[in-house]
Amino acid sequence: MARKKLMRFEENLKRYNVLQIEDESYKNLKGNWNKTHFPSPQPIVLELACGYGEYSVGLGKVYPNKNFVGIDVKGDRLWKGSTDALENNSFNIAFLRAEIQKLDEFFEENEVSEIWVIHPDPRPKHRDRKRRLTNSRFLNMYQKILKKGGIVHIKTDDDALYDYTLEELSKYKIKNLFVTRDLHNSPLYPQHHDIHTRYEIRAQKQGLKINYLRFEFE
Image (cartoon, rainbow, N blue to C red):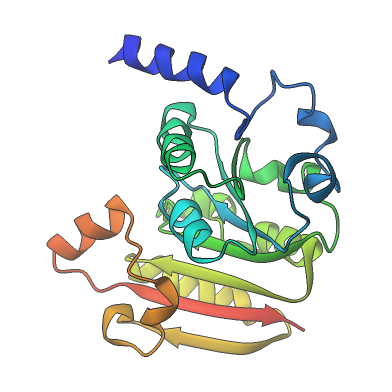
């Protein structure tokens, strides 16, 4: 297993659609995604803590008129998403190896049109609440880099995280809030184009319902 990971790390270094600290352009991505990386200047959509990049790849195929960036620190997982994008010749999909707490180091104010947070680590311990990707610390960054009218999507099988997210959002002025505690039996489901992460599939096998919400900052 360790050898396979090392092999994937080496392959990532050679791939144009995986951006990491070893790349010359890594520190100059902020404000330049549509200028220097993507072949066409299009709305930028982020998948945060993307894991294997199911949403980046899936949505990238559905919406060729948008540019997608999946972000995670796990290089071997990014390799999987990168491979799927390459096999589909999806030049509008890229993967960034970085920590989410440094998001504003890679994206300029008003540079992003949409953010997807899909089945993030719920961080159930109270002392870890500031590490939850729906904590105000992160919401403030999302608000900063999003264009006016930009959309945030949050999807989780963890009820406690969902409740916490709604509580955090109550501190902000938001609009166009849509919520469901049973996504697969909701009119909001078609927006997901039958894209499922492996974590979602696992949750469904355990009989868990999928929570989802979307909103815009005012």
